[in-house]
Length: 278
Image (cartoon, rainbow, N blue to C red):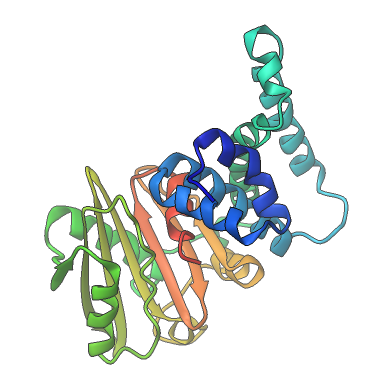
């Protein structure tokens, strides 16, 4: 099948997420994603939203605040495209993925940040051994130049080889990012537990990731987590921290590894990047 353009990709996008496509069409779609960051971002955000909704919610009536927030988001999207010269375009099949991308991102953030009836203690992470606290502090050290990578590479596979040589007791996850200028890596220990540090340099943006063995973050172990993070990770495999105005913090688990990412880039882009290789 010949290469697809953006309009054709938009036409197939919902089919790619919701149902099977012929293999030659799937291959052409992912070939386009390798070349087009915009279409790839739309696909990743929609796919992540569907996965989180499926893992987090059963088929029961949504709480009224969530229902109202989602309906408001839908109404806002509908209002923004109704009437005027865009009406005929909005009614076309190709418009579906375009409109739903913004809506998917909005719903995803509603789900991840929906306020629950919990106390501030559920979110507190000021302990020296807290994974979120350590990640945010390390991010500041990376930006100031006080935490320097031991090695720098242009390809994530080189970092994987470096981490394997360090005899780490967990599999380090290094999501690939085609727009990354370079990747940095360093390994050290905290209270006898190995820590993997990964740095992504993307133009003016820096994304820092701390990874540890998930077992070392269990209650009573080397590292700690706030109750809200522990609960969300157990239910969905993801957690976004709401307490930092100057940066975004995203946690997720991958097999035996606990990962914590910190960056000043927007949360939607972080989620898309971090799920690109999953």
